[in-house]
Structures are given as structure tokens and as C-alpha cells.
Length: 616
Image (cartoon, rainbow, N blue to C red; front, side, top):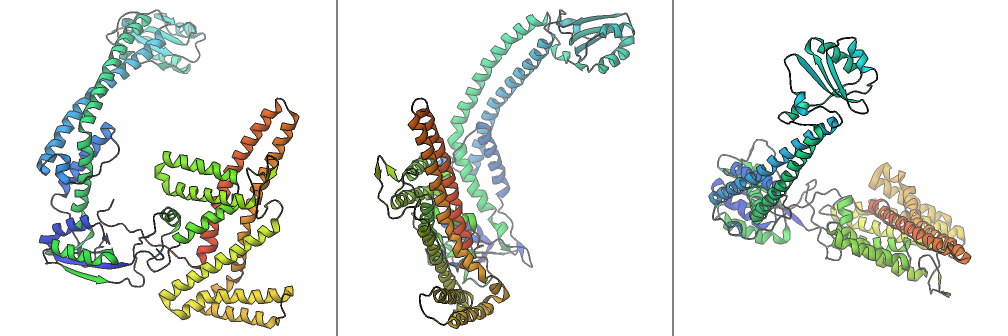
């Protein structure tokens, strides 16, 4: 809980005849984070013989799942038996059968959809021609006549222009003159075409209407009836396809899960080192499970494999597995968002599970706001389960807001409700200086706790001397500054040189530990502490805005009549906006105080996530 799970490097060496058995056991153990081998003087392994076949089946199954619109992958607990087949041969033949049935239903739907789309295109052309009194069959090709059917942007004086080229033509236009049907002798067709193009002629594809006879309006009605008939057939075909999908859904979803597992196993050797007869797989496993893993692997390898165990070395990229209680686990969200703790440094998750809600509650400390946000996040938790970790954090933080609301005596920004003053420990509207001192005091405690954690990290990794140089020097620096402050304020008669001497000693130790960079960063520790004043500033801003909204609405209530409704709207809109700002400010500032001020004192991070072979 304080540190990530302790990991050890495991190297498994064995003959290739037991490689497949070893892979199966590693998969079922779900405990080894395999380190992918890069080709050096030892080659990368080759996938198992059935890998291509399995990959092909998996692609087919996923294609069928997409085609049927299936969702929610199923868990698989009993291999072939759960799917309802005996072996890979039967699985492949059943997939082929499903593929054929679904393809037939899918082709039927696609065919009808194509016919419906064609009818739509025909109706679109017919609608353009509906105002032109020419039967559709007249638009068919002629030996000596060239038809032009379409629309022009500028129909004015078109007939006169064509007359200058030829008198052998017939022109039919719609009522607005833009849609036209023009029949011209082929000898003049090219010149007429140029005239039309100058007027922005856009040709209609009358070839779509081949075989159709009659006036456009009559044809539209006839095709509309055919379209309705096809629509009914399309619905029936879709229902048949959906029924077929439901029939095969369990089989396909279970097959997809099963084949994904088998492909992962079959392609595992691509991460191994390999010679002609030997395979080598290296990875990280939790030290607590080492004995059990050794026993299982040796049994699977029929005692023909060799297992070597090493502890992490400096510079090793050890995967991080955070082990926290269930109530704390949601706060791992912040670590995944920022960086995972290394195997040998403290995991701040437990600390954040306490301090983040406190900071958030300090900023959004209002009984009413707390209950509103609590209800909101409880509702969202049911609707958005994938955001569960973040929403659980916000639920805890909302409870903290209610708690601080009682401390501050605030209910939707009001300190007096129904004529009675709410009991409180401290008022945000009247004791701003005291809140400022509390915020800075929280910063001093938080920062120094971070330095203590940093001291433990360095002590564990590099020893006592380095821990004193790198972290103890900062505490000594603060002590020197405190001595000077006490002397200047007259709280005690302490010679000034005590303080300055302590600061000089701290600077020397800091230089030894962090070189010139440490000296440059000396002012930062005090600015970090002062940064916690934002707990007061943002909180007071929120309380002040709530107070203004209440006062503004009260003025409207006092005037009576319709203005009472306006006052209610002001309360609703004002407090909704303020809650939104409070949530955003409370979250961002609380996160910042951890990531920037607190983590900088002890946390390095940068580990990769622990992803054991076989785990989802």
C-alpha cells in the first residue's frame, strides 16, 4: 500500500518441445509481465504453427460481429465446451456456416438497399422533369437528333441564341425556365452545347430512366408504389438478418473471446528469445507469488525448464502494480493521469485519498452545494460506469464539501437561513485573514510531509547521507527561515546569526545533494507554501459570488409580482454557474497543489503499468 508491489525478474529457459505447455501455464497464471526480446545475437522466436489459422478465424469472427452489430463481449470460462464445439476443426466449420448464413442475409439487405437507392435517384430526376410536358421515352437516343436535358442558371433569351445557330430544334422548359428539354439536330449539337455551357448547364442523367414510359408525374407515382413495396421487403430482410445475428450472437462473441486468447498465446513467442532448440522468456512477477509461479511453471514444463530469479537493479524498467484498499483504489486515477510510481518509491495514492477531498471541501465548503454535487455524481455513477473512479472521487469530495459547509456555516452561500444564523467554526465572509493563515499552515504541513516522504525514498534508494543532503537540507533551510522570522517579529530573543548560519548550512548541504540546481530552487519552497493560499482565495471567491447572487435575488423578491419569478431564475442560474465554477476550481486547484507543490518534494514516477500476460 505504501510502496507498489515488490517485483522480481523471472527468466524461464527451456526446450521448445515444452514451450507451448509453458505458454499455456503463463497465460492461466496471469502474473508475468513479459519483457519483449529485441533481436541481438539471439533471434526473436516464431509464432506457434497454428497462429495464422487462428488469426484468420479471429478476423472472420470480428467481421461477422461488426456486420451483425453485436456488442458486449462475453467472458469465457470453459474453452470449446462453452462455445459448443469439440475442437478447432469443428470451430472453423461452424464459423464458416455462420459466415454463409449471415452473408446470405446481408447480401439480401444490400441488394434491396441498392434497388431502393436507384429508385431514389430516378425519382429525383423525374421530379426535376415533372414541370416539362414531355414523356420520358422521348429522351431516349436518336440517330439524327441530340437531346439535352438538365437545368441552366440563366435561361433568358436562350431560344433566341439557339435560333442563331439552327432552326431545327424543339425547346421545352419548366415554368421558371431553368429546367429544360432541348432536341437539336446532331449537326448543330456541339455549338448548342457551348451555348448551354455558357449559361451554367447541368445535365440530368436521363439514362437512369431507360425503360420508363409516360409523363414524369405519372412515373413518379408509379415508382413511388414500387419504392413502398421495396421498403417493406427491406424491413423484412433486415429483420431476417437481425434474427440470424441473434441466433449466432453467443457463438460469435464467445468465439471472439476464445480466439483472442488463443491468438495471444500463439503469438507469445514473438516476445521470446529463441535458438534452434531453446526458448527464453523474461518478465516481471510479484515477489509474493514467486513460489507458486515457480511450482506451476516447473510442473507445466515437466521439470525440463530452468527458472532464474533476480531482484531489480538500478535503471531497470520495472512495471508498477499499485496495491491499495478498495476504498482508496479510485484515487489511483490521479496516478494514472500523472505518472505511475516506480517500484522503489512511495505510492502517494493513499495520501491523496485523504488530502484531495480535504482541499476540495475547503474550496467548495457549502452544505447546499455539497448535497447538489453529491446527488449529481451519484446519478452520473449509474449512467457513466466507465467513469466510475473519477465519479467516486467526486462523491467523496462532495461529502467533504458538506462537512466544511457545516464548519463555515454556509447553505447556498447564506449564513442566515429562515432568520436563524447557521452555527459555524469560522466564517469565510468575515474571517478571511484567519482562513489565509490556515491555508498557508496547511501548505507548510503538506510540503514538509512531502519532504519526509522524499527523505524515505532517498534513504531507501541511496542511503542516509544522500537523504540528508537532498531532503533534510530543505527542512534545515525552513528552520533557519523560521528563526529569522521569530527574531524579526519579536516573539523570542534569538541572535540573528543563528538563523543565517542555519540557512548557510542548509545551502551547503543542498549544494552537496543537488548541486547548483538546488541553490537556484531555494525560493521555490516558500512560494510553494504560499501557493496554498489559493485554498482560501478560490473558496472565498465562490462564497462571495453565492452571496451576490442571493442579495440580487432578494432585491427582486422584495419588489413582488412578476419579479419574484425573475428572482427565482436568478437564484437557479446564479447558483448553477457558481457550482460549475466551484467544481472546476476545486478540482483543478486541488490537483495542482498535489502535482506541482507536493509531488515535487518526493515523487519522480515514470514507471510502466504492470500488464501480465493473459490478463484482460
